[in-house]
Length: 253
Ligand SMILES: [Zn+2]
Image (cartoon, rainbow, N blue to C red; front, side):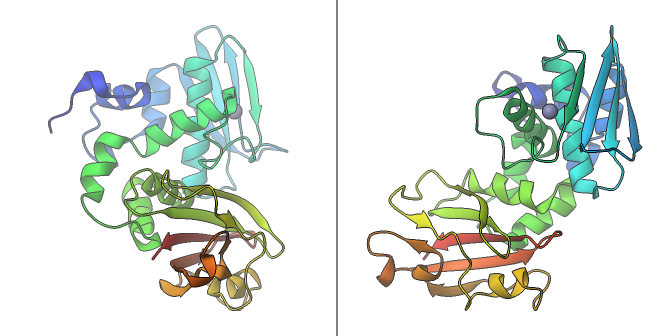
């Protein structure tokens, strides 16, 4: 594998230094241990993960009830605090602090999310794996399986190199919880706050459809508003997530 080490981000260099050449080599607990951090999975009250540091040792606790993708992301997030922010000796991070969708704001938490995203889905392994396949939730699901990442983290990763305007949205029954868009997705377009009742995403939010839906070509006005949307179409694909959430990928057709 030919990689220019000088072009790697800090978390990627860390993985590279630990001999990571394939997705299945990414062993975050081994990396934590090599850095003096002991990882425990246990019941946590009111947070998803925490870090307690003393000198050059630390204990990272991760909520045992979260699924594998979430636990790995939480561990990556706390590792970031340990390696970058250890002037503070303790962190208690909620599930809203930790998450791949919160990686853009400028804060210690966003930086830690960025770091975790690169640890779990490092560019130097992800992009050769994706090759020239088009972004879809099917591809995100396959990526999640290969890299043991959450579907949300995988879908957001695909957004970085989408070649056509693409957005990821997360809704519950009542409203849009968050959305992210590819760079070329026009800022004149607004993602609708409520799910349209004729979408599969709506059925998922209200529990009458489950799992991963098929991509559907539909009127853009079901999803977005803005100049010209009444004569535009989008490809949409949705998946039901835990806790009544629905994740969708929208591509302007
Ligand atoms: Zn944090």
